[in-house]
Length: 143
Image (cartoon, rainbow, N blue to C red):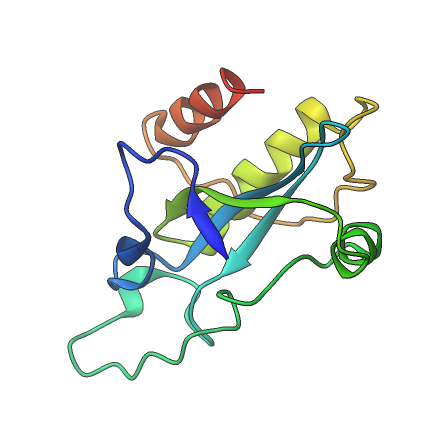
């Protein structure tokens, strides 16, 4: 079950309100302090919330039951290891979410407690007057 990391800023109902296409998440294993950053698309075939119109049929992805693309993380979850799943931030475009996920992995990926093993992203840089940077800084304050 997903929970919002910044509860004062987000409610889980906002994830599917049509303003966002993707989110960046963290899965944490409190017993040893390890964590994993990821990105998840909210709707099938929607990569940018600007494409959502009043008549758009929104088919949700499997985000509610999704765990991780990481085999290591998935194995630990399947083994019953205690973990938490938090949505860090929602984004209007997959491009923004991919960039923030990539930045977090680049910053924390070499730490012993970070379970991310690679950065596998190719994305354009979306100019946004520093919004993505502000989000990254806010998340960094917590890790």
